[in-house]
Length: 219
Image 1 (cartoon, one colour):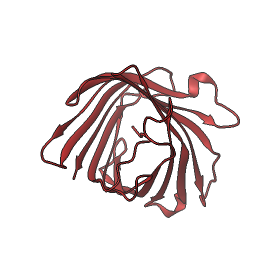
Image 2: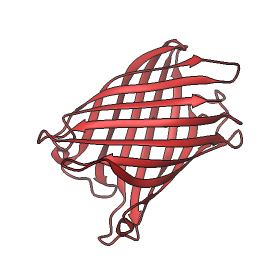
Image 3: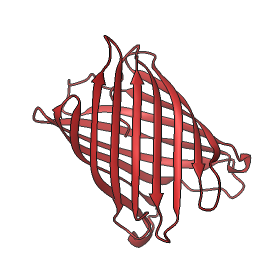
Image 4: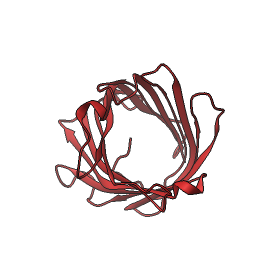
């Protein structure tokens, strides 16, 4: 889950994993390992390698990814904290060209304990053999901050197809489900963060269920 908040000087090693059961009963899995750095109070950058496993195949390297988050407003100064994401992916298969993802990152507090996030993102592949249109997707999160080590709520992810000509709803990909997150301090500047969710497909175009996990070691 992307957020607009940037911590200057923060460094992290991040591991992401996800596995999804498709409608035909088969399963696909993806995972990544990356290193990130808060270069300034406004810019966080991360470089990662990605692997995946398709049905009937072995795990294999998939792509390199360069992710950049920009914080556009001061934290807490306005009702909504605003950021911007720019992500560039270079697949191992050169015929797939490059993939770009970009869009606004929004976060707001509801009272003192509830946090809401909404990210609206566009993804497009260029220099591909087949070509492709810009796809419109989204991420959302609603969580209750019970204590730093334990937060709970819900998350949702999906896409509607080409941004200017949405696919029929039955073909769109929409998933949502319960989520847990938190952070454990292990030193003055060190912490281990986690973010996990079990998502259930809300449309026929989505996997039946998905498990996602994101862990970070910050120092």
